[in-house]
Image (cartoon, rainbow over all chains, first blue to last red; front, side):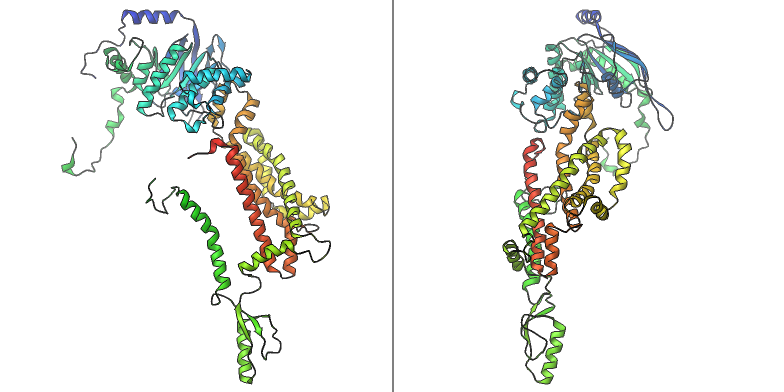
Amino acid sequence: MDNLNLPSYLEQEPDVKARFEKIRQRPVVLEVQHLGKIFPGADGDIVALHDILFNIHRREFICVIGASGCGKSTLIRILAGLDYPTSGQVLLDNQEVKGPSPDRGMVFQGYTLFPWLTIKKNIMFGLKMTNHGYNYAEEQALQWIDLVGLSNFANAYPHELSGGMKQRVAIARALANRPRILLMDEPFGALDAQTRSQMQAYLLQIWRNVNITILFITHDLDEAVYLADRIVVLGAHPGHIQEIIEVSVPRPRNPDQFLTPQFLATKKRLEELIHPPEKNRHEDLPMIRLTQLGDEVI
Amino acid sequence: MNARKHWFAIREDLSGQRSWLLGLCSFLLPLGIWSLVSYTPWIWHPMVHISDPGGVAYFQKDMLVEREIFNKENAFMREEGKSEARGKPANPIYLPAPHQVVQAFITAFQTAPIRRNDPWLHQSILHSITVIFYGFTLSAIFGVPLGIICGTFAFFTRIIEPFVDFIRYMPAPAFGALMVAFLGIADAPKVAIIFIGTFFQMVLVVSNTTRLLDKSLLEAAQTLGATSKKLIFHVIVPGILPNLYRDMRILLGWAWTYLIVAELIGASSGISWFINQQAKYRNYDNVFAAIVMIGIIGLTTDQILRFIGHYLFPWERRN
């Protein structure tokens, strides 16, 4: 990529610039204020997150990206209320987050569908937990099943579905509760490449049709650039924000854009942040040759 | 499926046909060995069944004598010039042949008890099943909820499990005399022994099963708005149900083990009483019939429960 003559990732075409202007004017849904998390360890405390600070505006699509061990999962668990910060706070609509709640829907990498419930009942689960009547819940569930294209599977059990289908159910299940924000923790990480790109397209389509704000965690650079309005890049040890990038790739997005200059420029910047050249440690590993001399590949 | 997959592939399923065949063999093989020992005169058969006592004074027709003594006596008779005893090789009385057990199996149900007030075999069996039912139901009513609570809250794990663990190591039959003192000699102490034998195991097993439930399901439910109480009844209980059911099937098998001891406590009763009674009369074919009966009842109940489970938990039907 270095040989290409790419524009700066900061350059934005006028309509992209206008779009970000509009997003900034929308009300803030989620405020992450100086979040810190320290895990007490045997060899001293481990700082998982340090001074994480960013806002998410209504209907924005935010990706959080970072190398493994940078605290992405800790961050999203705190946002979901499944874990507690040691300092700072999270505000949802100016209310402090204290524990899990249906106003922050979550999609996990491991699907986490309830195996004893049919697809329809899985989607109804949240509505029943929030004390909606059976009929309303069922009616809503059927609508969501339609929206994620699984009408033929309403009465199937999760184990009868493929990974991509399961994750669509999980998304519908989280959205059925009409959350203020949808938190997604590497939701497509376990899927094969083809299903994954299908799911990305699905998600963008759902996001367009449903009034929802999304925070999406991934370690896949293409995925982040393809999906996000803004990308929060985390660095490790301790987990901190390196940069928040406004993705200059225009919307609506489609897979053809993977090779456009803006896309590549943004991706190159992410590469630099996540895999800085001086830290390519694997090149320092001693190499032991186990091949015959004549069989060399380079 | 590869039809040429061999019979001993590590952790591979066998075809339905092969599974059936092997299941059949698991019964036919022991039966075959038993038949071989019973019906082949030159295998084992350490005794001689006398058909004609000949000149031996103390031999009688239909008597079982050890082969050594039989040979010695006959050698002696030959020396004396008297007529030799005759007989066929036989197994000791404690190993009846399969057909005898099958016969006993049928006649045991048809034969009136020797003393008038004694129960028939089917009454004994019914009595045993009643004792098991009460003991196990009682233990499940308390053991399952307690186990789930222990597996759900670390607080209850810490405060309950150590003591339960302590009692678990005391063999249930050891409480026999105490239970008779507390509860009299009728069925109550027997039910109590089965309760003691299964309850403490059950708490630990159920607690462990509960802990095995994938925690991310609980987290997902929480992000969907489930409160603590709803988590227990809408996630934990349905989530562990299939495994809980399996645990109960295994523990029910244990209940039968304790039954045999329990029935000998106080006034002995039920199928163990029948077995002991028949052993006293040296009716070993009846003893075998009764033991096989227990096996059949156990296996049948378990298969029925498995079949019911198949319908109760359709999401567990994989493959």
